[in-house]
Length: 142
Image (cartoon, rainbow, N blue to C red; front, side, top):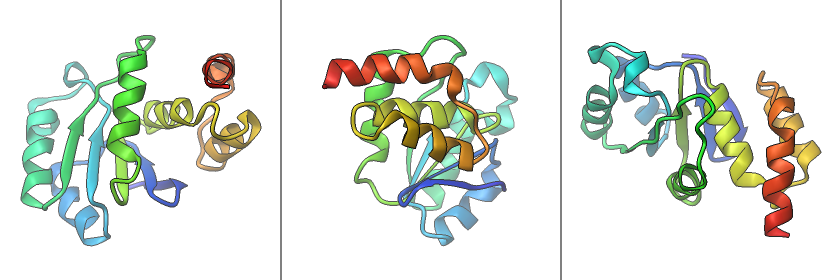
């Protein structure tokens, strides 16, 4: 697994497997957030398989698929609810980028844009392309 710490309570990762979930629970993660649409994966790692793995490991599970170009205010809000104050969270998608984008959008208006982008960059994700969206969301909150 390639876990990348985004904040004290959130790590992101490229695709994980059901057999990875017990190790994540043993490492202290309490919540598993799956941001990868089922249309991108085979049945062995679809949301049903991952939900079963999370349940078996004693983790809470959220299926919040991100289809490219289709991030909605509801998806941002749901990601925030799934990750804020819920204990250590691991969120994943194909590469970890979409999960990082959702985190960044939940931080708009809470953290300075430069800090959001630097945090993502330190984890290996270039979010400069979503900077205008971060700015737009921040202006609505401010």
